Length: 432
Image 1 (cartoon, helix red, strand yellow):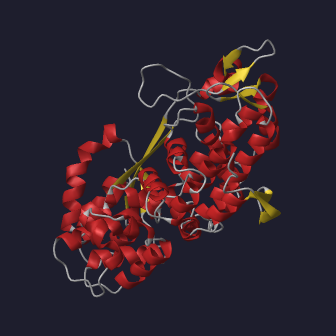
Image 2 (tube, helix red, strand yellow):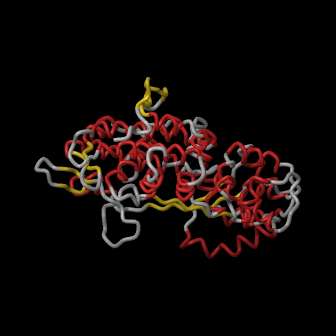
Image 3 (cartoon, one colour):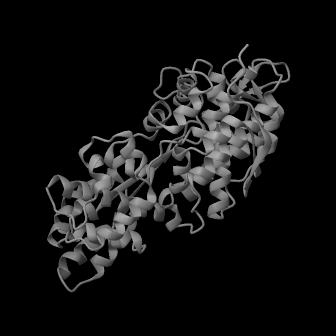
């Protein structure tokens, strides 16, 4: 039998972590993966995008979070060790997938993806399977190992149990980001008894299940997730910053397509503007580069790009009103016309933004995006879907909440040096 390429480190490495206290690394493979330039790039991509403009502490990165997901997965596998259904040979696979699951995120990822039609999950796969340091490290385990890691992250790996540790309705990814995001934003919503949940997790053939005695800890986790989405992730001020960010990317792309001459060539964005992005192009773009261009674009001749960048960098965000598409769409053509009369381009200064979340969904065969439910293992060994045992979870199961807001630059509308009557009519329509 050949000696495996990667073994244990001579001495355990630890990262001091404000959420998990310590992150423990004992495997040479994991230590080498952390040291790759593709993983180190995640230090330059914030975990929560524009949320730092709402909660000033939210400066943490995808690097922090990825280490956290690895650590929770490591602890789960300690619980699974020696139990039926768990194959210890897949331990390194699960740990690698946990560590690398967010590898493909770009700068301000969700706003960026909408404008440039990129998909961070596809780029994660590209990085793992492409000509990268990450790929070379993984391939030393065995030639098929990079593909297996990518398949786990993509949820196509044959052993669904491994996938469910990292991606399910109660997984290492969510358990880290809820606690980490709560810590860095300073809110109390995201806290739940993770130690209890880890102790009652059990491996089954195709998914992680929870001992029935741990049901209340899971209820607490689901309610934490619900609160974090509506109080933090969908915060209207954060959404305003995301709207402006998206409009900056959209305007820069439109100017490029029109043949506009930028004062300084946005070379890092050319391939994104043209939709022909190489792996090297993708990896060299991070938030420090993006913010540099926003600084430069404050001096551009184009009034819209210049104004949007000034707004984003100086937190002069759009205001918002609640928007009911069913009732208010009749006003939409008139609003757009008035904005044009007021010399405000409605494509950039009048934006409807929608958010929706499904806090917990039980399995309904045949529906799109079927989600594996959380199962409780009862004292008699049988499985019961969580919402059939928990009244708290049943109350929110399958209920999708959607929220619409209309964003606009109130400061421009209150400046009545020009288009006074038009702006008054706009305000009257918006505030009714």
